[in-house]
Image 1 (cartoon, helix red, strand yellow):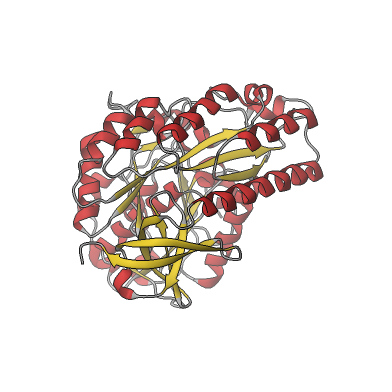
Image 2 (spheres, one colour):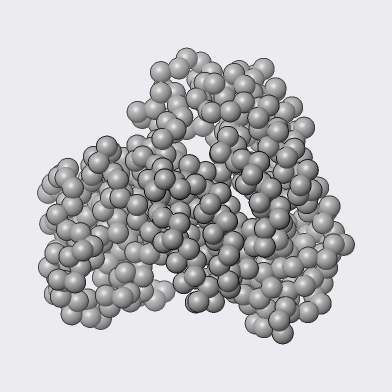
Length: 467
């Protein structure tokens, strides 16, 4: 029988030295992450903690002793995928301790606890205390596979205050450094503030130290991640521009990219700094959500289309070849055909590179549910398709603008068949025949033709930097 407990964790990272790590000998763990890059960074940190305690990552096909599922809850579909992943892990690893964390775990812990085979559900404040929780289980000590325990540890929303440092270091070349967590915006369609709490961040000095560690370990590119990274500094009385300036001085890191940043927080000072930076790439990801001012008001966004257009104009003025990715939501309650057509015209007019199109999903507890005029699912699909077509056209046009240019590409370690891929400074994806000498190396190339099937450009190689 599953029990439900709502409390602040009785265990903490400060007590971890008291754990008898011999109970972890010859134990293995498997990890499954859904959702954003922030989740991947956090899962990577959890994995590192377990590895340091002696719990190895399970090999493919090996039955694990511990399963960690880091969930997403941005849409109903994300909830469904999280449940599917949990059940799949339980089936594949019978007898393992099954631990679920992430946004879905924070928002709907009882729903997860009702899944037979789940042992632990940890909220946002508990996710980095995994070792403390699993060490209490008899089956990590003797492998008895007892699933009688099904406890939930979730801190109440107004008590989520910790900033948990995280940085991913997976098989890809890029590292994802968590600089900020939580959000104070409470847009009408969004549950993230309820899942991750108020805006908070690490200190500049601690984040610089993490970047230096990445460099020491051979990492060359870092993506700054968070929930609302432009809001950086709330808990340390610092600012995002000051963070960017300090990170720019870290030797060994060749590239930084700024992940999604709100248009009202993307200051002209930040754009100008990136334009003249040694290491920050000409690459921006900016959420628009709607190209219609009335819908933006319904969403409780903190800008209008005029401000957004100014930001795009400013970027292109100082960085004409910059990649600009834009998030858009279609089908929110109250979005009429006229609103959508107006938004579509606005988006078409912008010199952006790609759209990330999301279909509105109704989320319990959000203000959007109090609004009238829900949009028919078929209409949502049609609107999504229309914007995806625009995105495809814009991305192809942007890629072709780069044809024939000399670029520097950081190639990834992963091989895709007989090819390997990498990205230019302005985020054009290129491919070349696999060569292990190019892994995690910046290579001078000339951009060739576009392969429309893989959406990669040919890379004609010249020399490896610093060879």
